[in-house]
Every structure is written in C-alpha cells, then in structure tokens.
Length: 148
Image 1 (cartoon, rainbow, N blue to C red):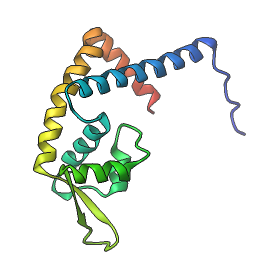
Image 2 (tube, one colour; image 1 turned 90 degrees about the vertical axis):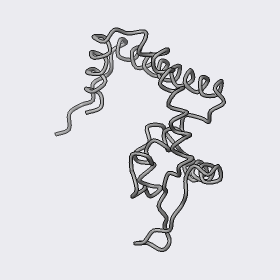
Image 3 (cartoon, one colour; image 1 turned 90 degrees about the horizontal axis):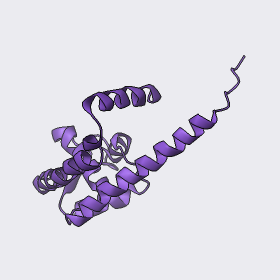
Image 4 (cartoon, rainbow, N blue to C red; image 1 turned 135 degrees about the horizontal axis):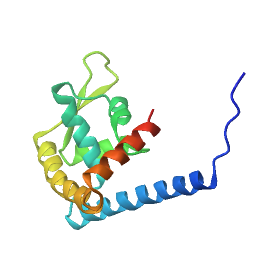
C-alpha cells in the first residue's frame, strides 16, 4: 500500500517559496556581478569548470549536462558558443564516429579562472558574508537533508 502524501503546512509552503526567491535572487546577483566585470554568464563558468574537472578525457555533451549545476535547456547552443570563442574544442569520439567529446582549451582554463575571481567574490558578498560559519554549517546540513 502506498503512503498517502502529506499536505504541506503553511510554514512549509512559505519556506519553499522563500527558498526559491532567495535562490533566484542570489543567482541574479552573481549574474550581475559577472556582467559588471564584463564576464560571460554563469552557465559558461559551470560548463568550463566541469570540463576542467574532467581533465584530459573530456566529456560527452550528455555527461556535461548531467554534471552542470544550472539548468541548461540549450546545451548545444552553449557548447557552440564556447567552441566559437575558442574556450572548448570538439574532438570526434574514438568509440562513436557520430559523437564527439568536449575538451577545455588553454583559453578556456584562463576564462574559467578569470570568472572564478568574480564568482568567488560574489559568493562571499551575497552569501557567505551574511552568515556565520555555524549558520553555514547548519544550512548545509539542512540542505543536505533535502538532497537525499
């Protein structure tokens, strides 16, 4: 027998809405900081970071999508743009002649590092600097419960 879903309390509904509002606000603040620093959008950073982490093996596009923190509905357009900017290169897959593997270029590494300087400052200014280490640990624990 399936358990009947619980109706969320008013507190749960308000907290859910607040979580979404805060998330949207923080992402908008980071995007604005990147724009003010004449850097590309956060999705670029996310993709470049995952390709950096992948190392010399690179990633297939579907693997990149599964690792990205941000929703990316137009991954092929993002990849096309990163390739045209010389930040990423496509290499035909040795195991699948129809597919390709994405690799970070040296310019891509430089761009990711430059973006990180701005992003790191944004995290400090808009998030970490507003909470104590104890509060951050508690928040991390609570969010961890939601991710399981």
